[in-house]
Image (cartoon, rainbow, N blue to C red; front, top):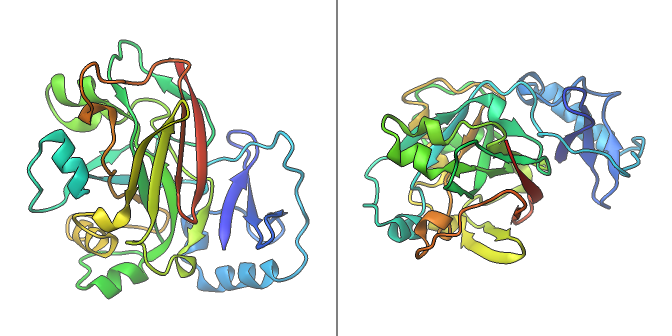
Length: 284
């Protein structure tokens, strides 16, 4: 299923994109798309049954698409998780996954405005595969257990301010948690529709110019290993999100003058089978 949430900020309602591309209203079958729903096999089976029937169609004219998951508990991020990205930044290949966090309030809809922080000179783009957790996961022992804990996948934009992240001391969090820095969606695609998360094309454009054109096959630590590894250090709950890293092509990895983002720029990004985002940047 391709699940999504539509409507104004704070008043989104659940919806489903059917096989013909028609947007269908799910509000009569689920209060929202959140961890409680994703952990409920019976409720998900009911949605699948409803999807094969006649759900009311929604008029998409002027309809905002919000983040596909409500009430996210935490956003866990994996740094330097693509071989080509590590090479372009001159970093050594990590021996273990690099973990940092983003606050859930950085999450916005896939086409919402992204704000360039005040004082920023190095706002950067990063298209990422997001994993949405559907089962409580702690101390997982195998890849099979890890993948069984995955409810589905989505497109994430891990927007980053590199000067805040790298040059201002302390942890990366200062460059990762600025307002609007985690567009998510448009869809939560359930795991049964993504047979191999390591075989997805990942692309990003800035002002129409292709900047990132990679594949999840380049991940240093694949999805199953990431989920298993993270569960050794924190408990993952239904509705939690893991951003699994970005391929080569970010502004930080390009020659001087590096083309960091400015107000007025337009970023578009997509992952095979998971949909497309588009954001216009404005000053905070």
